[in-house]
Image 1 (tube, each protein chain N blue to C red):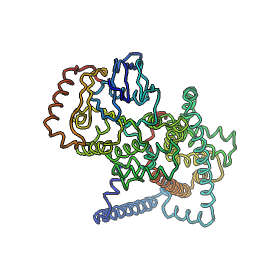
Image 2: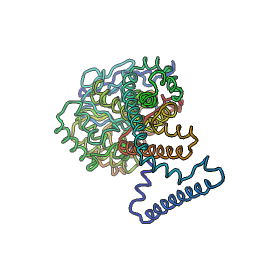
Image 3: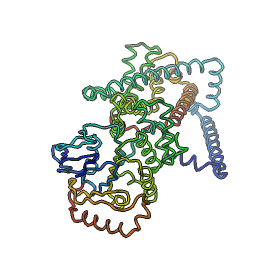
Image 4: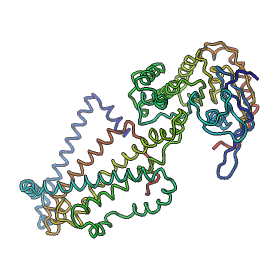
Length: 276
Length: 262
C-alpha cells in the first residue's frame, strides 16, 4: 500500500513516466500477441490440438456461447452463488465474531473446535453438503458461505480482542463509560478488522462456488469446465476458464476498490488468532 | 508543606507482579504539587515516572499510600484531569476534527458547539487545514498537536504530560515546548510534566523533581528563571547551566545501573 502510494505520487506529471507507462503497456500487448501466436502455431502440430486446442477454436466457442446465451446463463448462476455465499458468510462471520469475540472464556472454550473446523479443506465438505442440500444452487452458496465465514469471523474476533489498550485507556481518561468504550473504540476497531477479512474473502467466495459446481452440478462456469473436459472438448474447457479468469479479475478489482476506500483510516489488523 | 497543594502524594508504594515475581516500581514516594504550578519530574527510564503519572491520573491504584486531588482521594479517571501519554492515542478511524471533538462528545456537548471549539483549538495548535486528515496521514509533530488539542478541549485543571515531545526532532520539540508554555501561561492550570531530558525540565518548569530508582526523590529544586520564557533563549543563560550542573550531579550521584527495565 505505502509503496504503491509512493510510486503514484512520484509519477505525477512527469513526461518520462508517461512514456514508461506506454512502453510497459506496449510490452504487455506484444507479449500477449506473441503468446497467442505461439499457441496457434503449436496447435498445428500433429495431435496437439486435442490437448491444447487453439486460440481460434476457443474464440469460435466463445462467440458461439455468447450468441446462444450459454455464456450469460452460466455466468449469471456463478455470480449469484458467489454473491449470495459471500453476503451470507460475511454477515454471519461479523455477527458471530461480535458475539464470541468479547467473551474471552467462551472464546477460549470454542477455540480448538473453531480452528479444527477452519482447518478442514472446504472442498472436502462438498460431498456432505450434496447429501444435506442436494446438488442445486444452495450447495454452492453454502460452500462459498462457509469459506467466507471463517475468514471474516477470525478477523472480526481478532479485531474485537486486539484493541490497543492505550486507546481504551484514552477514552476512559476522557470520562468515557464502558458503553462508550465499546461503541467508540472496540466496535469501530473490530469493524475495521472485519472489513479486512471481507476484502480477503472476496476471491474465496468465487472459489467456493466454482468448487461446488465442479463437483456436482448442471449449471455454472465450473459445470462448463467439467462437462467440456468430460467430453474431451479442450476448446470448451479453455473457453470456460477464460470466462472464469475475467470474473476473478473483476472481483479482484473490487478488492482494490475496498482497499482504496478504507486505507485512510483502517487499522492494521493483527491476525495472530488466525491459524497458519 | 504548602496549603495550596492541588495534588498530594502520600507515602505511595506500587508493586507490579510479573510471572509471580514482585517488582517494586515505587517505594514510599511523597510529593505535593502546588495549584497552578508547572512541575517537571525527571529521572532515568525505569524510575517509575510513568507509574506515578498513571496513579495521579487514576488509571492504576497505589499498592499502599494515597493520592488526593483537590482534597479528595483519586480512585479513577477524573474529568478535570487531562493526560497526554508518550504514545499517540488518536483513534485511527476518526479524522483530526472528530478526534479533537471526542472529549466533548463524551460530555454530551451539542454538535455545533463542540465542532466550533474543536476548530478553534485545531487553529491554536497550528493544524488548520488538516481537520479532515486521518491520524495515519499526519506526521509525528502534527499528531502531537492534534493530541494536544484533544487534551485542551476538555479544559482540564490538571495536565499530566508523559514525555510528550520525546519522539520529536530537536527543532520541533523546542517549537512545541514554546507552544505549551504559551498555552499554559496565565491559564492557572497545574502541569505535571514527566521527562528524562533535564534541559527540557529546567526550561519548562517552575520546579524540577529528580527521581532516582523506585521513585526516590533525590533532588527537588525551585527554578527561579523568569516568565514568560523562550525555551531556546533561556538555555543560553548562565543560571540555566548552574541549575543543570547541580541537578545533573544529583542524578548521577544516585544513579546505579541496575537490571534493564523490561
